[in-house]
Image 1 (cartoon, rainbow, N blue to C red):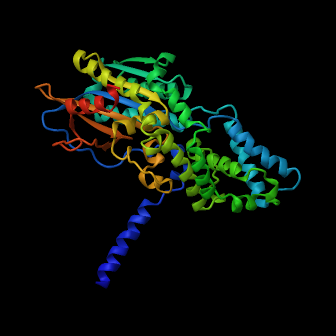
Image 2 (cartoon, helix red, strand yellow):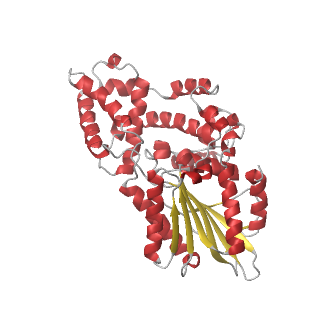
Amino acid sequence: MRQYIIFILFLLCGLSARSQLTPEQTGSIYYAYPGPSGTSTPVPKGYQPFYISHYGRHGSRWMTSDERYTEVIAVFDSLYHCSGLTPLGIDVRERLHNVWENARGCSGSITPLGERQHREIAERMYCNFPLVFRDDALIDARSSTSLRCAMSMSYFTERLKELNPALRVDRRAYERYMDYIAYTSPEGKKFSSEKAPWRRGFRDFEKRNVRPERLIASLFVNPEAITDPDSLMRGLYWITADMQNVETGVSFYDIFEYEELVGIWKTVNARMYVCNAAAPLNGGLMPGCAIPLLRNILESADIAIKEGTSAAHLRFGHDTHLIRLLALMQIEGCSNQETDMEKFHLAWQDYRVSPMGANLQLIFFRNKKNDIVVKFLLNEIEVKLPLESGTGPYYSWEAVKAFLWERGGNG
């Protein structure tokens, strides 16, 4: 019995170690695309790929505004000139200025890493499903009007053209496409606002998990001089998280304790879960914002199947809209429900669902009888739907289509 108990404890310790977040993963939606892992399930006999439907988040980027750098730097600068920084604080200030020299004027823009992410995803798609991209196949690409999304589309399709110059690529980033690529309903905007009733409980949750006292004391001679230590800690957290996306060689992980990073991540993850995923707290409102996107996917697939005009529909947008789509479609691991805010991080993890460069791919296959099956790849890894399938991750398109229309296509 004693040996059995030791064995069970050993297994539990192993599971705990494997489930521990890396420092990079605590960066939430700033987690840089990790690339695919695992193997691909063999295609059912007699089936060949012929069409791909895709939604991708933009690649790695700088933070979204200059102020997210300058507001933090201003605190360090003001205290530096009156000898208010500790030796570590002085060092951190120098690092911040180093980062700012690279970030200045680049806020919101995709980085070279983001470019490589999309080129590499495109290349793997091409190499894994070459029959889709043969001859002069038509690739229909649409993007959010955000420059980082349009550039991601450009890098992605440019790589496809390099691999097959005969491909016909139709690329557009018009405002008219925002109605499905990046839609949020008026009710969704109200629910996500800072004045929403659920925010009261969330702010208490933040206070329990964001503990800036140790960090602030390590950086400033007089910690009481910092009027909003919580905000400053979160500002440093986001700069720290984004370093993995910009490749400057600068890191700030050493100024945080691991549990401090995890604590902040839990609050960010909770907010992303409530404002975008299948959290019962939003009553399905936020996944419902992805209904126009789901309709576009279903209608475009039907046209591609019937008319055979487009070999691929590629869409380039943002993390929140991808998260909502995945929850609406009930993609494996993306629609878990939890009511206890203290357990949100166990039910759903933002870095896993939507890192920088995240993508959902629907790969369509057919046989000589024109029977069609489809499989789903989330971040290029096979995932399942809550449907019966006799062929692993391959599902009858008719069954999938009926399920997805029921989920929102008919809404």
